[in-house]
Length: 176
Image (tube, rainbow, N blue to C red):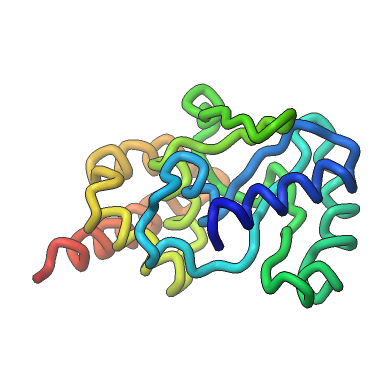
């Protein structure tokens, strides 16, 4: 996905949901803070988002411009209407979030380490690739990532398992 495609999805989402403020999570949120992000981080063709004030409207977005929609078929990328519970991040992630303005639309984006925590918690192979690139490109620091993982609620998440998964990605990123 490109920055232009991200903006297209945001504008379409705003029109569908009649909202102007969105939380953007998932890998392509990287484009908001790093418009020139390495190509290896931009492989996803979906933008995970939800209306900040009315998360329940994410279903409208998903139905209209989500996977397998005519929007997706036409443009080759799509929205994935998600909810606040989708990404596992520290409870205080919003304190570090950044705000990005695209016309009259506000996109709220997790700080890159918080975004990486959500990828570590999901721990899929594509997430491993994403976290390795973030580490290799010095876009995140392993120590800060570990600190943020330790802020997760251990009653909801296997913090030690997530931490060990992240440490393996850091070791892989450091390997020649």
